[in-house]
Each structure stands twice: as structure tokens, then as C-alpha cells.
Amino acid sequence: MLRRVRVYARHGVAPQERLTGAYFYVDMAVDADFSAAMRTDKLDGTVSYADLFQCIKEEMAVPSLLVEHVAGRILERVFRDFPAVSRIRLTLTKENPPMGADCREAGVEIEAER
Image 1 (cartoon, helix red, strand yellow):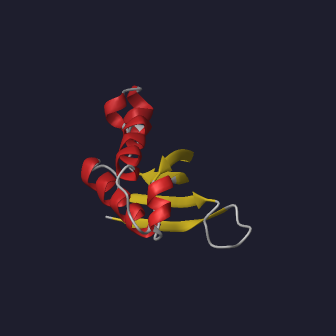
Image 2: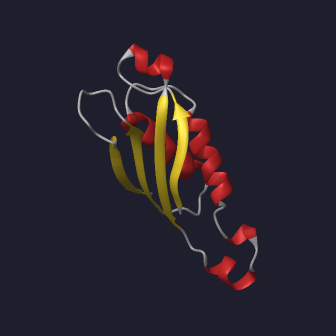
Image 3: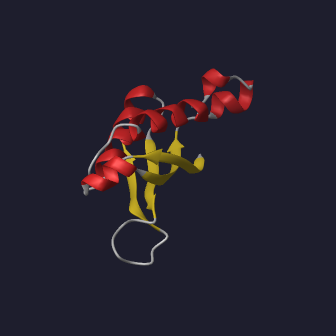
């Protein structure tokens, strides 16, 4: 599980949002069979959260109009790169979205299964 991963990225519908960028937060939990890691204490029996972070970082670096699109790319990438992952719960939010409201964050929560 990764919580409150803070990433500066250039996503948004308005051209200015993609030009100036903003902070985004990602929470991710994955389901997989971790029993080998629990028995052996070896990394190859689990899903490395450092590797999950790398997926998030790389996908967040690709500018998009919608956070839904970014979230979908992250889900696809994790399922592709980690065959052991059977389910993902992902939250992606944008800090202080420019919509004329006093709002800390706005975004999406998605749950996906293979």
C-alpha cells in the first residue's frame, strides 16, 4: 500500500494547468498472493512498493487532460508490469483544483480487477 504519494504533474483541462502544473496525491493498494514473502522474507514473493511508485511517477509525468485518464494508465501499467496483482484500489486527487471553490482536493477513486 502506498499512501499520499505527492507528485508534481501537468494535468488539467485548461492549457494553463498543463503549463504551470500542480500537486497531485496518489493512494494505491494492491491485492496479490503475499504468502511466499510472509514465509521466506524474500522480495520476489511480493510486489515491491518501490516499483509501484516508479510506475506512478512515470505515468504521472505524461500530461493529460483528465485525472481519470491518468488513473486508467496507472491501473493498466500496474496490471501489465505485475502479473501477481489481482486487484487495485487507486485514489488520484489534485490539490487546490482551479474551479472557483474553496476545495482542498478533487479527483477519482477507482477499484479494478483483472
